Image (cartoon, rainbow, N blue to C red; front, side):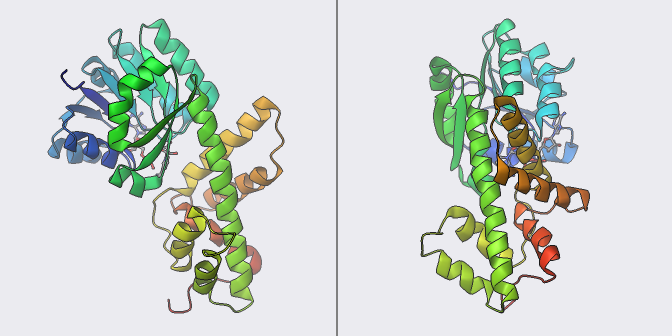
Length: 299
Ligand code: NAD
């Protein structure tokens, strides 16, 4: 059977490598982004440019969006010039952005009313996982549609069906509780150790062999002590994720005392002009409280 044509909308830090991997796997791609340079880059790699989200949808069998935030997906999916306005009945819409589970359900319902099939499929694994095709993909929707899209997901990483529409976004919110709380914990631990005079690089090395070892400490800890705050995953996007979590906790009636504090720390990063830092830069908000700068002694 011929490979489906894929529409890819949102060619940022994640969308560009994901679409490149799909091109390399032999899929035909029609792409769109509001930033022309991003479109030009992927067209040079073999894709065709669409003129709008609606145009991309009209020319594709499977439409993928990888956009920043809930309002962006609402506009691109449901807007006048959006995916649902252009898509053919029977086509499949997969939103891979991290957005509110409530919006994911709303988009799925609207898509189904138009005769489409819809999945929410947010990812974890960062820009490196996007480049290597090793993302963890958390999917919400029906099993038949999941199985049809599975070969496409497999180009980008490992996909797991978590439940019905919205379930992928719920699991991603759980992931972001853990990543957000852990990155703040790593920042506090390293600030304590550094102010007491110990080399924070040594702390990362030693703790990575004990009970506290985890992906955030091993991967992000090294970048923190090198003061590498280039994105990666921007603080403004992690702040957005913490907002999704706090809103979901409100909707489902779940107190989240620790995650709420981390939400405030990311808010501090954004309102003080550090929204473009990688989330490793969250340590600068803790450093301010302690009055020091945390860096490896050989740096
Ligand atoms: P990004 O800001 O780098 O990219 C988003 C892209 O969407 C940009 O190129 C932007 O121009 C485009 N865009 C915005 N509005 C648009 C519109 N109306 N029409 C067309 N294009 C539009 O963000 P990113 O880091 O690639 O993240 C994308 C999503 O993936 C976010 O929801 C983020 O939370 C999630 N995510 C990111 C990472 C990461 O490490 N960067 C990891 C996991 C999940």
